[in-house]
Amino acid sequence: MGSVDYLLENESVFQMMGHFMITGQIQPKALERYNAMQRNFLDILEKVNDQTDVGMSSRLVTHAIYASVTGVVMSFKKYPGRSPEEIKRHIYRLVRIISSVFTTGNIPENLREMPGQESSSPTES
Image (cartoon, rainbow, N blue to C red; front, side):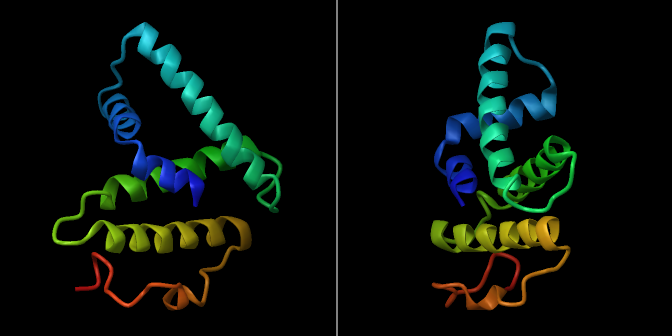
């Protein structure tokens, strides 16, 4: 879950991404740095996707997965009333669902069997 950890642990990058995605406004020099970071991030994700059967348009599928994962992180990163560990576990479970659906077309059956699942997720209480 390296890409998820990166988004969770690099607050300034995540905030910059969120600001740009929401406003669509960014200075040319910052856009250059943002695009370089995005291409690098997408290249890494695409290499992982290439090891699966996601189809011929792997860059397009990579964009769909990336949008899904960043949406999950954005939706739950600062969920009120939950500890950082509870949030992280919940985000990991959601990303496992996304990954499984993209690679196999199925939701994984063992979501509750992940290590450290003793506390509830942000939406389960």
